[in-house]
Amino acid sequence: MPDAGRTARAGRLTGGVSNEERGRGMDGGGTIAPWAAAERAAHLTELVLFLSVHLDRAPGVLWPEYEHPALGAPEWSQVLDGLALELGPGTDLVARSGGTGGPAAHRVVHQIEGAGTWRLSGDRGGVGADGFQCRLRSGEVLYIPARWSWSVELTPGGRYVLTDLAPA
Image (cartoon, rainbow, N blue to C red):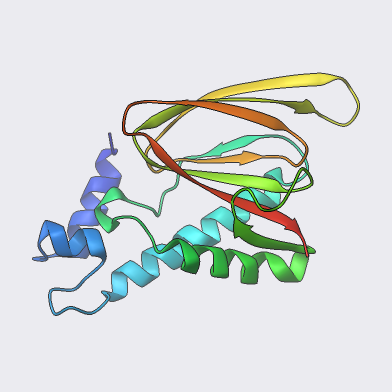
């Protein structure tokens, strides 16, 4: 359930746009609304900052401030392109659709519908095996470090998008 701050912010941004148009990021005239592009850019920045903290360290969960369900599902190709551009200068990683990066890939999970219980296991710097479990709800993001294994139990109707961050 969105918090009051998110609900209020979304209401200010959308004005008199219908729910259907709002879900597609439309402004009522059939074009992409400027606030939708700004919200997605802010979400991308937030995601890059989140990854800068967790990359190569440990799993982490992000409760995004800038991705509100009223915006609908983002165009994942744009998210991947933006993520690749933002990460490129600081790392040797490229973003790809999930499942193509192999065991050396870091993974980013966007829970887009329903919920899922995620179980991870891996090694944090040779100290021994570690486990991590969390429940993601729609709109939340999970970072899975490279070489960590994972499994998920989804609720009925639960869906996620998996993005691999792998060496170029």
